[in-house]
Length: 68
Length: 466
Image (cartoon, rainbow over all chains, first blue to last red; front, side, top):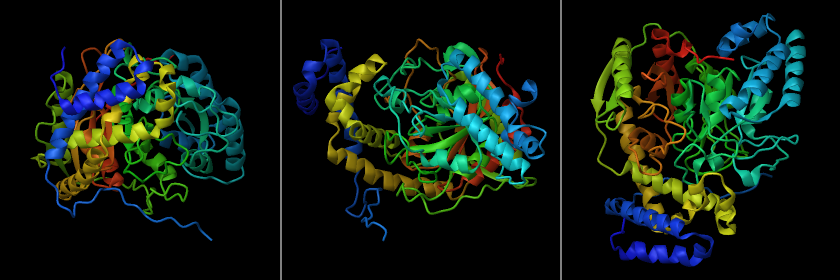
């Protein structure tokens, strides 16, 4: 299936192809192109959800200090 | 002895061991024999730990004879998913060909705690390579072969804790330890018709366990009954300085009588959408039983991208956890063809999207807690389908090909859930029911599952055993 043009997906796929392309077959690259397009497409609903400045990431960081 | 013990719950075995009617050494020998003889039938086993098992079993026997009884797991054999580090030269392969010879010089905290409880490690159990983190889409994704379902040899055991599911279901071990990032305990439990408990994130130390996704990974028990899962969780839960994400909240398994207890259950609107007919039929029959236990009401959650959030976190963290393998190209040595390159796509996940997902996670966790605050548990089918055929691509929620709102919500928010069997398809494959509770409410979901199992007998049915 011919992917619909998506400049963001194209740019990210180009990055991936540049980094790893020599390791990959044409079939793998074709599949990766679809996967990248899917990742980008699925990121958009995530980005569309409005959040406030006070909505922090749910990942508490605690400064470390060794015992003793 | 075989017929009496192979499918006996842990509590029954424990009573027999404590009363000295059952020898831990004889029990270990029995299950070691079954692991060696039958394990290959299901591709369930990576390494049988015979020497370590017999040493532990002999110690258990001596201690019990001398009046030192450690508790209900004393002398009980078990298997551990092969992402848990084990010392003593025992390989820890992560299910992946590049790590066949990997060895650690220490035991994972879960293994150490089970040793302290007197449990007997009999096997390292098969798993999907790298716990499924490289994007597998079909069961042939482990160097040990596809996990084979004890109910049908042409069906998948589920994964990524494939061997943990099939070994318990086939009576090769009384209980097993698995892990879940998204689905990997509930899937094999559902597929194999056993109980599988995914604890609250942080309930069980992850020290010594391969990391797939640091903020999604949970370790938990699989057993023949919900009660077995409670007994095991009691042994493995607890704060561990070696795992800073492990919680300071203690866990004491509440196994008191449930007589007279009434439950409030919620069903997410549309939760059976996309489920197979047999799964829906089993679920609707289960709801009738749940109405005997209390009330069932339909609930709604805010319209947020639950699955996208969980998936973004998982893929981004997995990409980082295995960065060295990806950059070095080592993933080309993995078993599943799609695992040899899919990870490269995750370079497309932007940091801002990962952080957005983490922020949404906090919003979602508060939203679902508000709903769960008025309930004992959300209930749903354990999985949308029964076990799929071995040679067919499955629709993966993690891959975005199938809906799994409960899995997305439960794992993104770090909530506990237990899957228990609730029926069969016409093809003879198990279906499953899950109870998902509020954070830290393992006792509530265990109580609900135990009550359900007191009213049903699906957990007493077992596949043909060699």
